[in-house]
Length: 346
Image (cartoon, rainbow, N blue to C red; front, side):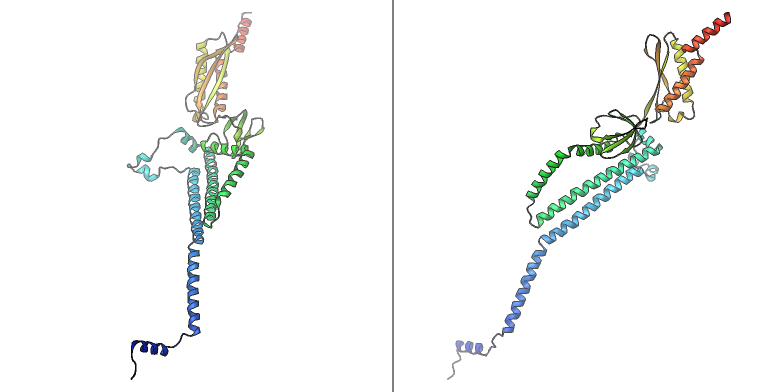
C-alpha cells in the first residue's frame, strides 16, 4: 500500500524541484548592490550638491537682476528721463503724474554742464551700488554654500569680525573718505564745474571722486581735498546766485541823486541783450548800507543764474560808475567842476 499523506507529498515535491544554482545567487547580489548604489547616489545628489546648485543658480539670478535694475535706473537718471511721457502730456486722465516745474529742473535742462554733472553723479552712485550688491550677494552665497556642505561657519564669521575690526581701525580715515564721498554725491552738495569753498580751498571743482575732490583756484593752484576732511562746503553756483556790487560815494553826496543814478545803472544792465537772459530778477538798490568819515556805501544786487554773478556784478559796477560820473556825484567830478568854475570866473 502506497503512503500518499501530506508529509510524503511535500517531501516528493521538494526532491523533484531543481536546486538553486550559483549563477542565480550572483545575479541577485548584483541587483541588490545596484539598488543600494542608486539609492546612495540619489541621497547624495539630493543632499548638499543639489543645495549648492540651487544656491548658485538663485544667487547668480538675483545678482543679475539687481545689477540690471541699478544700471537701468542710473542710466535713466543720467540721460534725463522723466516720469511724464508724450502720452501723459496729451491725456487728461494722468495729470497727476506731472510735478510742478522748479528752478533746478529748468537750469538742469538749460545747462549742458548741469546735465553732465547729473550723469556723472548718477553713474558714480550706480557703480557704488553695483559693487556693494556684488560684495553682499557673493558673501551670502559663500556662507550658504559652506553651511550646506557641513562646514562650521561660526569660527569663520568670528575671525572675519576680528579682521574687520582691525582693518577698520587701521583704515578708518580711508573708510571715512569713501563714505563721505558717497554722501556728497547722493546729496548733490557740489559737482564738477561748481565754484566751491571747501575749508578755505576756493575754486572750481575739476574732478570729484569717492576719496578726493580736486579744486582749481583762480591763481591756478590745484587743491586736493579729502572728502572725509570736508567739515563745511560752500557752493557758490548751485541753483541760483546773487550778484552784489558795492558802490562808494562821497559822504556829502545827495542820497536821492545817488539812488536815482544807481537805478538808471540797474536799468541799463537789465536792458543788456547779453546779460538779460541770465537775470532771474530785476537789479535793485538797497540804499545806504554803511558809511564812514569820508564815504557812503550803496549796494546793487540781483538774483542771477549760477556762475553769472561775477559778470553781472562787473556790469553793475561799470554802469554805476558811468551814471555817477554823468551826475557829477563822484569826488573827482566835483573837484573838476569846482576847478572849471573857478577858472571861468578868473
